[in-house]
Each structure stands twice: as C-alpha cells, then as structure tokens.
Image 1 (cartoon, rainbow, N blue to C red):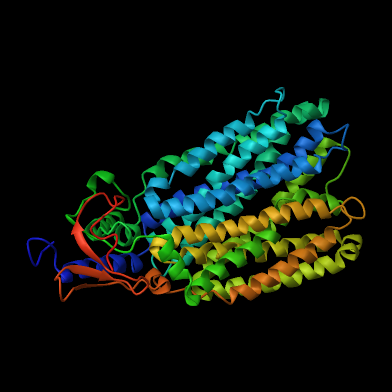
Image 2 (cartoon, rainbow, N blue to C red):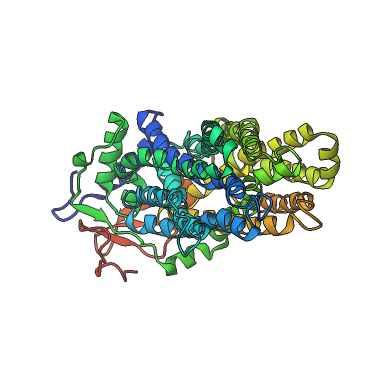
Amino acid sequence: MSTSNPKSPSREDLDDTRRAALEEIDNAKFGWFHIRACLVAGIGFFTDAYDLFSINLVSAILGYTYFSSINANEVPTDIDSGLKSSAAIGTMFGQLIFGWMADRFGRKKMYGIELMIIIVTTIGSALSPKNLSIDMYTIIIVWRLILGLGIGGDYPLSAIITSEFASKKRRGAMMAAVFAMQGFGILFAGVVSLVTLLAFRPLILSNSQNLDYVWRIIIGVGIIPATIALYFRLTIPETPRFTIDVQGNVDKAAHNIKFALEQGKYIEKYEIESEYRIVIQKATWKDFIHHFGQWENGKVLLGTSVTWFAHDIAYYGIGLNNAIILEAIGYVKTEDAYQSLFNISIGNIVITLMGTIPGYWFTVFLVDSLGRKYIQLQGFALLTIIFIIIGFGYKEIITKSIPLFIILYSLSQFFQNFGPNATTFIVPGEVFPTRYRSTCHGISAASGKLGAIISQFVFLKLKDIGGKNQSVNHLFKFFGFFTFIGFLFTLLIPETKGLTLEELSNEKKIIHIDKDTKDIIIDDPTILSSRSIRKSRPWYEEDDDFSDAS
C-alpha cells in the first residue's frame, strides 16, 4: 500500500481499500465460499434443533421406561419441566455470554467452542448412570443445562458470521437457509426415534425396560453432525467487518475476502498483517448506553428482543410439547408402550413435513423479495388468528374432526417458520453496529429463550387445570395473545432487505486527515470520538495513547 509519509498510509489508500473491501462483499456473486459458510453454520443449527427438540420424544420414552407403574407411564411434571427447560435456560445464558465474547475476542476465536460443549454434554447425557446417589434425571438435567450454553453460543455466532460474509442481495436467504436447518434437525429427531424403535421392537415388546437403550441412542446420535461441523468451524476465517471495524486491519480484511471469494475457501497461512491499523471506538458500557440510549437505536433493540420473546412463548410452548398435544387429541395414547411411542414419532414427522420444513424454505426463497418485516408481520397476524380459532373452538374441533385440528396445527407450524421464527433470527444479525452486533443478537435471542422458559412452566402447570389436558385450549389463547404482542412490536424494527450492514447500523465511517495534527483518523457518526491510525499491535491490547482520546 502506498503512503503519503514514512509514518502512515494516505487517507485515499485506506479509504479506498476499506470501501472496496466492503463493496466486494456486498456485491459478490453467490459462490462456493457462500455455500460453504451456510453449510458450516447450518449443520450447527441442525444439531441444535435435534438436541433441543428430541427431548420431546425422550421424555415420553422415559415415562414408559421408569414410571409405568407409579405415574401412569408419564414423567412427573417437575422432572418433565426440568428436562425440557434446562437446555433453554442454558441456551439463554450461552446466547448472552457468547454474544458478548464474539464482539470482544472475535467471531473466529469463539466459533467451534460451542460445538465442543455440545459434543461433551451430549455424550454425558446419553451415558447418565441410573444407580448413583444422585438420581439419573438430575444428572440429565445438569448435562442439558450445560448443553444449552453451547447451543446458545451458536445463535449469535452463526447469525453474525453468515451476515457479515453475505452479499446484500442474498443476505436474508443465506441467514434463513442456515436457520432452516432447524427443520431438518427436528425431522431427524423423529426419524431417529422411529428407526430406533423399529430396531428394538422385539426387545421392547418383551420388556419395556429395554426402552432405556432407545432414549440413550436418540440423545447420543446428536454428536454425529456436531463432530462433522467442528473442523470446518475451527478453520473458518475472521469476518472482514470485524477485522476492519473492531481490529482496524483494513489491508488484512481486503486480502482475506478477495482470496476467499476467488478460491472458494480460506487458508490461514495466506493471511497478511498490515503495518498500520485504524483505532476506532471500542465497545464499552458507556458507549453502549449512549448508543442505545438514543430512541432511534434503542427502539430497534427493544423491537428485536420483545418480538423474539413473544414468538418463543408460542413456538417452544408448542414445539416441546407435541407429544402432549397429540395425546390430548387422542392421536397417540394406548396402553402399549411401543405403539404409543411409534405414534408420537410418526406424528412429529408428519407435522414437521406438513408445516415446519415448508415454512422455513418459503422464507429462504422469499425473504429477499418480500422483506423481513412483511414476513414477520403476516406471520404474527396469521398465527394470532389460528391460535384464537384453535383456542375457542378446540373442543368442538377435536370432537368432530381431528384431521381439521392437525391441519390447523400444521398451519401454525408453517406460519411460525414462514414468519417470526426465521425473521427474529435474521433481523438482529443485520441492524446493529459491528462492535455490538453479536452482543445485541445474543440479547435478542436470550429474550426469546426467556419466553421459552416461561412458556414451558406455564404449559406444564396449566394444561391439567380441570383434569388431565383439560386446559390445553386456554394455552392456545395464551399463545395468541403473545403473537399479537409480537405483531405490535414488529412495527419498531426497520425493513432490512437490499441494504448494506453499514446503512442499517449507521456505520458510514469516513477516513480523513485531522487539520491540526495531520494524523489520519476515522470518524463514525455513531460514536463520540475519533481515533488515530497507529502501528499494528495485537488488537486486544489496551492502547494508552488513544483510550482516552476525545
């Protein structure tokens, strides 16, 4: 790079290099590097969904295995609640912790750690012993709590990495495709359950205690996709926007993205280090409060957080309790353990194929043309209508036509995924400044998991008021109320289709020469101060020369 003096590069060089690098990303043709990024991130979400939603099937199996004689083949409510909410609690904390760490230490440094946690805890859950002083259910719950930390880390990391590598034309589709792998993870859980039941059928029919093998296999299979994805996550490059906007290394970002787009892959040994780096505003609590204390910025974080919270109340209230809902309408319940669990697995597969997976892929193909906000608004609106219909007409519907109930139920799955389930994931990965993008995605996602936790306790506590499963209809009314709240708060978020991340996050940085000092500085209208260019040193070290500059 040319320089205007021996000490620093010229304004034109840095400005042109930065703009060219960002434009190259935003206008890049969709290629193998983008496909690879989607696959690497998507396999993680496949694993996350498998681990989160397989517990729906595992809990039913545990009921027939260990509670056949003492609780009518059902896991006691407190244990069931712990099994289903523990991973969500861990996920909430994982989203907050990994979201902050990815902004502090870098996306690349954190990516892969979350999968290591998932692999270790999945093995621990599957091998939980039965004969210790601590009961087996407590051990599983603790393992799933830690498992949730890894799952939680995947949300902000995969969202931000995909967002920051994507072109503006296809960014929504790429992020939606990553998230859509959840649908295949949920489907895979049903398929693995079905296949394992079929494989162990003779043993189960002879003694239901042999179901012990089945639930352990279902949980253990979750390590396979996680292990496949681990190597690729550890070798993914740092995102160019983090390299520029946080590390301040313009040349390195420009070189890495050019090499990756041309070669379709990233090779660490070909990285370069430039002599000079831009020192810009660091992420601090003071700056965070100043930035989001302004209504135009704060309302966006409020919107992404409340809409995700409202959505997950319905999504997880239903998704983690499919077996209960199918039982409540008389679809699965028999005295035969094998037949009941077989019916539950088939029911989950049918619902996933009818509503969940199609909804995800409608979003993938339409999100960049219809827009995120439109899809989220129509999704919340239609879900509110569907839940009100089910809630007020529940008893009459299941009395006269169970197929009608399954159709309405599948439609709710469809519009959750061709609607807020996908868009609440996408938008927080686009609308915040680079230095807070992962943190704010983590805050938004953690708000969602808080809703999931509340929903789980509410569902299991209220469903039996008036008798077993007699208040399921009121829960659908409860879900409808919160989807309406989600609709209202969607009005706070901006439409993001077709815009660059810099346009969305108000990061139109301008590099120029200070009239008095002649230093090359970078101004950002979202921050209070400017920072000079300095010679390169490790980006995470404190810089006394500039930390107090104003």
